[in-house]
Amino acid sequence: MKQKYRPKLPDFLSLCERNFAQLLPLLPAKLAVGQQLVIGLDDDHFYRIDVLEVCPFTTVVQIRALHEQRWSVVQPTFDVRLYHDARLAEVIGCHGVRYFKAVYDYPNTDMLQPDEKRQVNRLLSDWLQLCRRQGFQAEPVLG
Image 1 (cartoon, helix red, strand yellow):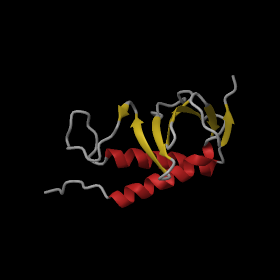
Image 2 (cartoon, one colour):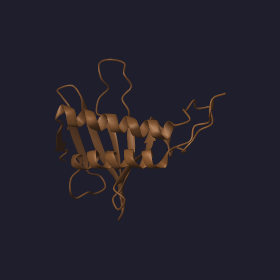
Image 3 (tube, rainbow, N blue to C red):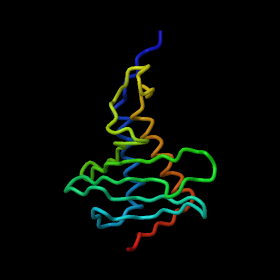
Image 4 (cartoon, rainbow, N blue to C red):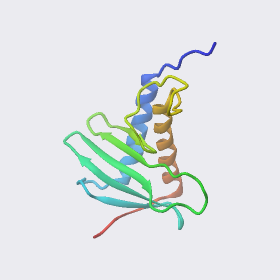
């Protein structure tokens, strides 16, 4: 019989710490609601970061592809909450799912994996590593 998934909090917090450290260089030093930044990975792949919420200790940003790519690959849209005092970045929404539970029963009606929360944060980590490897160019959206 398969064992029930049990989250490992230290591993998850380490992942969120790494995401914070990699996401912070993409953001302007002074954050304000409504700010937008375009990230260009190459001539065909552009993403936009929108600042949705700024509070004394947290910021919420949305990261999404600017245009659908030529092939039929689903481009992730991340809603990420940055906890500045704890130096953590956690995905709070991805592909229309908001506020992930730590563990899901499986199977479930939405077909989310038992460790869905960890998986979407790992996906953000992979995207941030891609930005770093590609030598992203970030430009503020003027207007």
